[in-house]
Amino acid sequence: MGLAPTDPAMASRAPHVLLVNPWIHDFAAYDFWAKPLGLLQLGALLRQWGIRVSYRDCLDRFHPTAPPARTDGRFGRGPYLKSQISKPSGLEDVPRRFSRYGIFPEWFREDLSRLFPPDLILVTSVMTYWWTGVRETIQVLKEAFPSTPVMLGGIYATLCLEHARLHSGADRVLPGPGGRHALNLAEKLTGRSAASLQSESRFDPDALDTWPPPAFDLQHKRSYVCLLTAVGCPFTCPYCACHLLAPKRMRRSPEAVVEEVRHWHQACGVSDFALYDDAFLVDAKTHAIPILQRTIAMGLPIRFHTPNALHIREITPQIARLLKSAGFETLRLGLETAIPKARERLDHKTTLEEFSQAVAYLLEAGFHGNQVGAYLLAGLPGQDFASVEASIKTVKACGVRPIPAYYSPVPHTALWEKAVRSSRYPLDADPIYTNNALLPCRKEPFSWELVSRLKALCLV
Ligand code: B12
Ligand code: SF4
Image 1 (cartoon, rainbow, N blue to C red):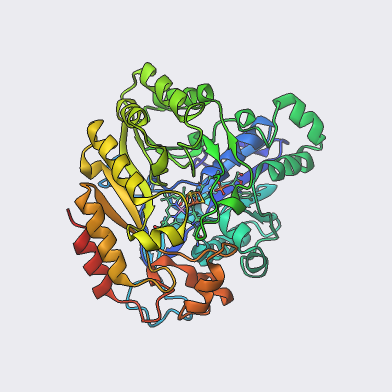
Image 2: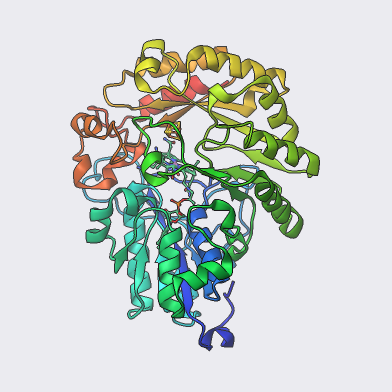
């Protein structure tokens, strides 16, 4: 990627698209295996149609101007740079510092000044409550390239479409999955028909195996790579927007997944892989099991992490053994609550019996209790914190780590209306209030005392 002064090749006539991963504005942020996978997928698609792609990552921990990056979080994770900024209006009374996470604005401006002006800029977005970071990024892009159209997509853009149209500063907001958008944009940029682009690349937006591997090579460094083996989930949990973000379940072939892993390991020395799937273990017989078996057969010294949680119900003794042999290092399970009544009301993805059974299988397979974490939702509308404390104790009693997942209300989910009614903030007026760090659905103001108590209880 070009931080070097403008590459003369850039001045040639092939269309040029700049991809941008925006800053995060938040009370806290850390690179827990967080990469703009969707944006890098679009980059790979555009490139294969002959479009020149540049990439600027406002969250780059390995920026050439930065001091050597710390990866003290292990397995490739680590802290972002940060600069304190003023709190957004409405949050002035929160007793926490608010920061811009990522590279300093002057570095970003300098990087942009070295680029040949792009024909189009694509900006991604993730958490709804990070939207002010998106807006600031777009402001800087507009100063640098006033006549280049800026298009915004991604999760915030999809979940808060009208808000993004009004407030992000983008010229257009393109919600939903990106494959078709990429094709339409490539058609306009290259002047070729979508049909000819598709037949040349055999690309079908609805067939994941026809997508090229995400363009992780555009990053300065790959301390880990994120993998997506399938999109979509058969469940519709009331707190989750998966059904909206990935309405159709699509899987890649086990061969393609394993080849991608081999490629990143052999070509770039990547040892850590974070699985972004919503439902990796669903239909395991034809999906996860062959992927795990092929991974084991490759015999590479690699590790896998599942920050996005595995489905507890699908964990059998065989799957537990395969996960262990394939090099799974960090396992997260989507338990959400361990209170029997609350469990039944919350979702249908697991039961407490299935949880303790799955944990037993994992421990028998050789996982250490510290490697296995159970996410517990905290701060749900009307939730009593004593129940979170009780869940923590139950999880600990099973011999694995409880991990509180502070609830972030998500528009268009079944729980949204209740969240809006129970929040002390006007959630539907501004996505900034959906920040899980605020515990926005509690009537009482944010309390360090409560968060510290939960943290202390979770210590093993
Ligand atoms: C992976 C993931 C994470 C990763 C980090 C992801 C990241 N990059 O930061 C981890 C595990 C760390 C994480 C953590 C959390 N997450 Co999360 N996470 C996801 C997940 C499962 C997948 C996101 C993803 O990368 N998908 C794969 C890529 C390929 O998709 P994509 O980025 O959407 O890109 C596609 C399109 O959007 C589009 N596109 C993207 N960019 C662009 C740009 C343009 C111009 C165009 C045209 C198109 C386009 O094209 C792509 C291909 O189709 C989503 C759920 C989901 N299914 O989307 C939840 C989700 C985003 N997470 C969510 C939540 C709640 C959280 C947590 C708060 C959980 C908790 N309580 O602790 C934390 C917060 C972390 C923090 N503060 O840093 C919520 C969002 C909440 C919100 N209010 O926004 C989601 C939606 C899940 C849910 N509950 O519904 N998460
Ligand atoms: S099982 Fe997980 S990914 Fe699927 S809908 Fe429920 S929370 Fe979302």
